[in-house]
Length: 472
Image (cartoon, rainbow, N blue to C red; front, side):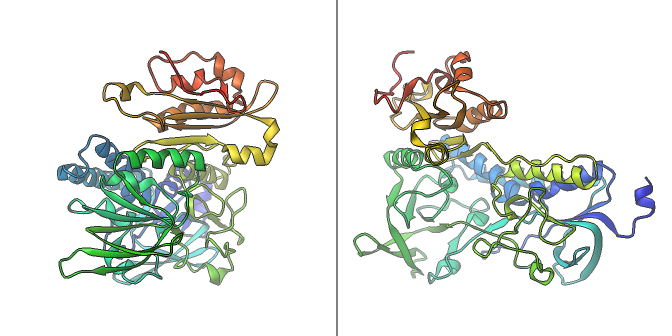
């Protein structure tokens, strides 16, 4: 190709970050004839945990989370240590697979920590401190984020762990204190867990009603919640146990208890500090630290692009990063002008009672359209999986938020129950096609499934009628 013959840079594209998005972007660009390199370097966690190519999703996120979640459902996560080894071995095989794919697609992989020198130059450092200077027509930042420690709490860093470490433990964490601020994803990892909230309701990205159903279910099956409690300090006792001291903000009372493990799940911070963005004047959101990007993922400096978890206003989800990365690669190669559509992205929380959603929450729909212009259909149902075991199904719930009037365009769908992610994935495609309530009720269900209950939903919240599903 003539482009390669007259190139003045080392590469057409340099990608800093070998996570799902960065890998997808780099491979797509290489397939389109671009000369591409990926720099990926994992800074060990505070506990020294390190991993290979593939980023958060592969190593300390989606993949081990789902595998451990499945183990927890089978009652083996704590008892069967070999399962933990199997998860780690699977992750290592994925690390190797990513390296092979990059090689096959002629993407240069370098285990270097990258930082920006200017809009066309990247400085890479290996673990020995040796420097490599690389140039590219375009630089793509896809470094994602890392979990935060509450640095204002004595003993938090010395004695606590984060999601960077939980999947790589050599043994069961035992009785675990989990300070939770934003996410519930991690709770499926351990069976015995003690959770603190700084707020009255788990304020993750989803709606309070659904969060309440999930926590009610977890409390019914043995998870202890201490609401409106703020941790003060963590001390290691002579016995090796970890003593956590916390304050109940409602009563003002101070409490103590001992644990085998302290797990912090208080949010994530973008990996921007070591990139040298300030030297180039790249604009960041001062509150979040994320890179401010345009609809085409461009940063405020020409030839610099950022996407995935690092981009301001972007969902912190692997599939969106992968799709956004591929589309960015096609645009930069001049093959397409298509932009990423961030609307109606489905997602799931792998808590013991799974929760999935796509589209708007009821609250957001009210805010945008007005309470009188939306209709909410809902149902409490009993999964067939719960019947033989005679498990309580009172938290298994479906909510479909629609426009009121006409065909009733569907604005949001929310589901708690078994295999929630599988259910939401199927219905998510209908959102891209402008699905309406009429379409929903015209759809024939698959019997007997939980997803079938979605197409049968017909009781509105407005009616005040009992929404409990009866009969087969």
